Length: 276
Image (tube, rainbow, N blue to C red; front, side, top):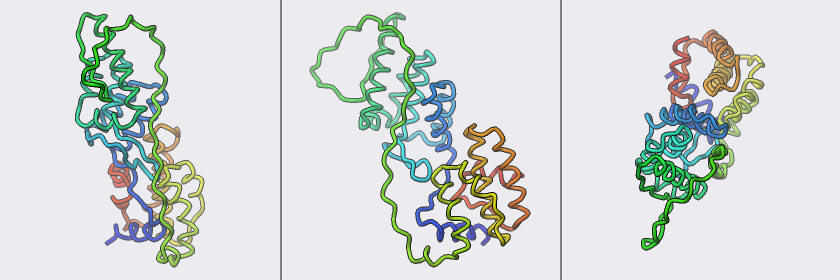
């Protein structure tokens, strides 16, 4: 089976090989980057895309390679709604699904959401509406309800900083990896490590050599195409789409029988590869 060729080779080269970004992971990663820059309209767009494919919040997910994050698209979509002036939407998003339960276990996110709820409460009071903010961290049952504070001076909100958790320790290479083709390892291992770590620009730098066999050329060029495609999708390189397009053409010329494996490449990239 042609698709098993890439699975076999990549498994030999990297025991820790994991799938590339699924579409909802791409949307979430882009939303996190937009939140760091304070681009709230982009945050809303990307988080809504992530929610459409995977609305279930989680305290820890692998986005790609060894990058782990708390997966709370409702939280960031709510922040975007708040910064764009829609408190009712923000409060509704924060109350969705498992968002409150997951956010309550990550103190930085809980503090951020509680500040947002207080800000919304004050804003809705000024507008003559009522709001019952529910803090992400539980409070004593008998605690008296505080009267709304005077409207604070509005300052530009600092960019939201995603919570990055440490990855699990890597397993040592197995004998099977050590016994793999030295030529394959020498050529593809650095590319694979860079790709799975999300260092797509490094993949482009490392993929300029010409491997001696058509199959090795196909593997190298497909990784190059996928890295450039992801850079283009993330908006991090102006000519990335052209590089991806050329790499796909060259990969097809190297071996037209091979196809990208769904275990390693996102559905969007596979559709892109097949459409060239």
